[in-house]
Image 1 (cartoon, each protein chain N blue to C red):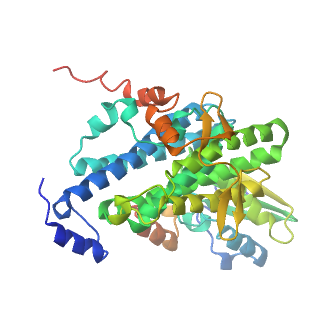
Image 2 (cartoon, helix red, strand yellow; image 1 turned 45 degrees about the vertical axis):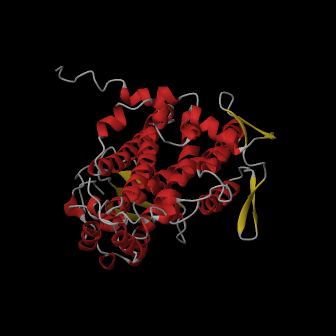
Image 3 (cartoon, rainbow over the protein chains, first blue to last red; image 1 turned 180 degrees about the vertical axis):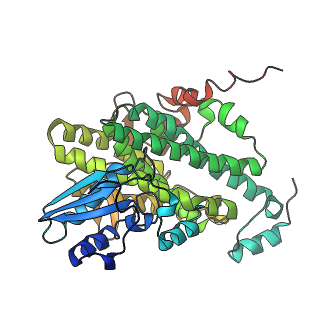
Length: 118
Length: 308
């Protein structure tokens, strides 16, 4: 899948059951710097299942994101805890670049409540 | 500076209300608030050069970015404290750039240099945990509204520092061999320094105006216990020894407290207990890198000033 596809977060119900499970797992991971999960933050561009391998297309809110290693570590740890997953491959993509327009409405509310203007 | 009468002020405090302006304060409260803010601001500020000298040893570009981001956070946290001090009538410029290094009021631990990435991440796991306990208490209890509100984001950011400390400590311990030995050596000298960070034990501290004025809510020993209850189980869980153990509901130290510390060698002599007077003397004299750390942010201040 090209990194240009699927620029907006896709709701779990629109995916197959297995992929929905991966999206739900990703939605349990909280950003290390802000009280928002990765799906609501809109940094997950896509999820693909290939046998026992999960492929995640991920971006960061800034190229100099100081939490990028932590976030990728959290994703690996969480997805490897899912039954039937042996390998997690993370493709970090920068195109299209992240902007606040990628926040879900829930994510926007959370960040506004936290004091960020989005 | 005007202040209201102390009966009205006592009423505000007793009702648990927040103090919002200088006009509501008594002179004693203002003095104690300033002192507490100076300790907090100085501690955050000095951690920046102290961490910077060690962050240069980061083992990857990403780790270096994390280290630099933590330093940026610490400077921002210092700025919050100094900004409030300015609103209370102090000069930020005088406080930061014109004070003698020995006049800074940060914990002695920062005068002992952090010289490796390992020592930096142990500082994130232990020093930042101490900061987290102290600031968390102020955030919950502080009677001065502007500071209490300013700490909301500080707490979230300190959490990020703790994570960096814990993730890396775990990773270094899992690496084993010389890496784990270096981690153990760092914990050996930094653990007792952080235990000391919380100050005199309660039985020697006769009176705390900070508690009376609800600038903080917990005593030195309560905060020390909170720190031990977090750090001891964590270090044990990653296979690192610490000189303390749990006894029922509290943590006991396995060495005489206080003990003698050789700052140049970064070594404690647990066979040489000392008095708190000795510790206070060591703190007053400051440690080996006090002048160097302060110079790191003071030295260029006047360079680009327009000459009168």
